[in-house]
Picture 1 (cartoon, rainbow, N blue to C red):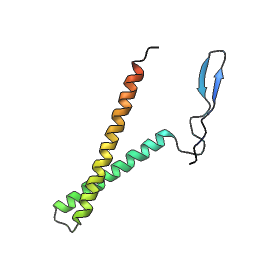
Picture 2: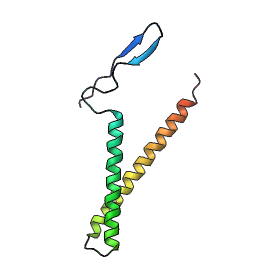
Picture 3: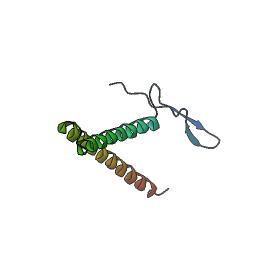
Picture 4: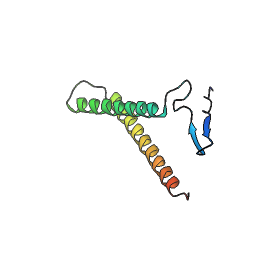
Length: 100
């Protein structure tokens, strides 16, 4: 497993503030890019499932198994995204409650 190294930090002794040297990981996409891609993939999955369900309801020739698999995959993806959001909000609240 190839794990990217942790970015070193630059310490400004005059103000004693630690600042990262780079916001872009070495050899990889940023966290924001990964989140945007994941949300885009989830949106595409939801749109596909919706389109297949509408086509099935309209009486078009669509395989029922394909529709059910797309609906379940979209539902699982949405539930995963909701749980990730809940964990992020929970972590944020925990951090904000810490004494400084």
